[in-house]
Image (cartoon, rainbow, N blue to C red; front, top):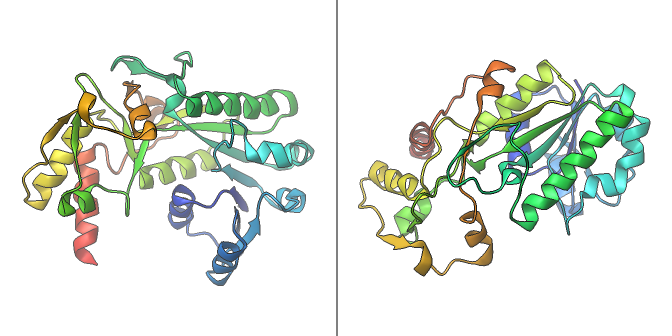
Length: 287
């Protein structure tokens, strides 16, 4: 396997750690020449993108992950490399596009699965719907082996609630009926590797754990694990959230994850936030 990653961020780093690839088997892109140089010293072949012709890398690759999100409503990878993907479609075994469960919009806490009609309520969600359609269009029209992964809220090492609970900045914001699905980054990595092992071009997968839950419950459990009192509850209407933070509360849904289990044979390492938080805290204590 020769893996090319567009957008070497948090999830992509954990995927590479999961795979433990052979030297020289992974190439990545980043926006910064300085970061590209640092990645090179760590043994990764890095390109600055946009700004580099990726045709040679696509010719080299067997597998491609698109982890870069839309910018100004448009997919930056397709904007720069659409023709190269079309030319090299037949040489690729697997292409994965990381999307979001935000494409489903608000369902008042109800369940959604991969067949649920897409009805995003945010600009970010609408941009993801458009990007998914473009990538799937390349699959339908040119045989590009595209797989779409709709990720729930991501947490993991360095992205847990413990620091804010410890320093007193965490808040338990309560909006009645609000639930979110979430996923540990290591479970995303194992879903992606499982899909690479059994490609199914055109497939779409929800990636989340088994336990959609109100966000205030997660904060309260983190405080309990730390032996601290839970932060006080703050009604959503008085929380003074940033527009970005408030937009997450505009949608409430429970995301069904049966397809990753039934089609890919995935057994979640962290089936709920309790298991995930306990593992994060244990890892912190071991450092």
